[in-house]
Image (cartoon, rainbow, N blue to C red; front, side):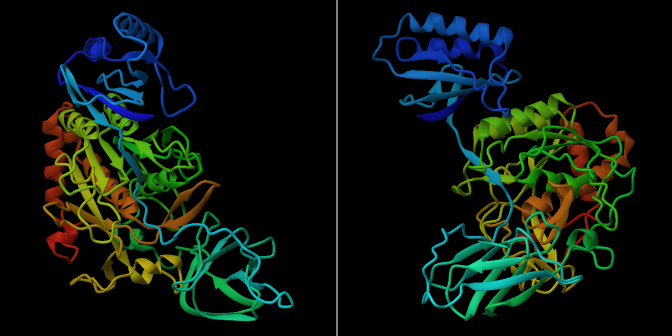
Length: 510
């Protein structure tokens, strides 16, 4: 079964979508209504809408034969008339009178990840008389065990091994050897309040100890707090920001969030904490005074993807909910060509700009490829990622993001290894801190993440501060003039980050 979206023509009555579909499909397909009540991210059909859909379907099926392909209508966006469809036989033409049929494209959080996956443990390597290779993981400040950390051992061209530290902080690898040499050891940061670990060319001795750095920004800030000052309690006041992501919180440092809770993958909570977290001891966000509205689109932690349909609906709902800024820390699952367009999300971005809502999007983490969609859309602000090397402890996992592309203003600032650039006729608009960023995650704790996913909310937070300090913009009507005013405010506040336009676009905000 394949899925696609019926996108009605602009300025058509959203409620007429069912009639348009049934008229177009009359005799050629059998239509049915199948609400997706199983997914909290999809509202399905409700009340009068369901009745209208079923009445239209009943009219259409009278002319269809049993051999005609079945097309299920499984969800609907009331504000735009977009309909999510599912069928084993997609119509041959994407154009029908009154609208178009668009494939369902999938999107992922724009987080950079050094992991290659989870290999299944095989307890067979080496002679049976030799013990399995054990490594102790300890916090460097008090030597207590690091519990539940995922460790990865790999050598180029050979199978990688994964294991999880036990209650004593001991990792047992499926390798019966007294030691290994010239390997890469990775300890993922997880949600346990530490920086993780990475070492190339390591020698691991059975029973040896690895010291893991606990998160502490009270003495040395991370890249976010070095490049952008932590906001005060009223910074961002009066500005409502939409976070279209995996849900947010609950978290004690996020009292200013309403809407969908985090599904446990942590990405949306991390993004929200960067924008407006209330953390103490250097852990606060950029604009703690904002109100954050959470719209969960990454609803399935197993696949980690969202349809263009859900993202379309979330942006449209953010417009209805009078958000001023929408944070889109997401990108197309497949890079596609630089000119690729997704009409379903493009419609929502254009609607947002027309309603005075500024959409800011992650440029993507494809290691210097062109700007990903939707960041490259003309109505989105595309954000690339920077890092600050002194903000990363030695051997912290996020050191893998460090590159030799250095700022000509501050040589400690680098353009992240993973970040996309404005190449192949695409454009970066701004650059922001996105390497080794500490923010809120499930479990009432903090963790580092890297990606243009992190740079995007850092810039959103600064824009919220700027708009909050300009009441004339706050009181403007919700139309494209307000969107243009926010863009003009950004241009008047730009700073040079020390990179060329391919990397930083017009510059950065601080």
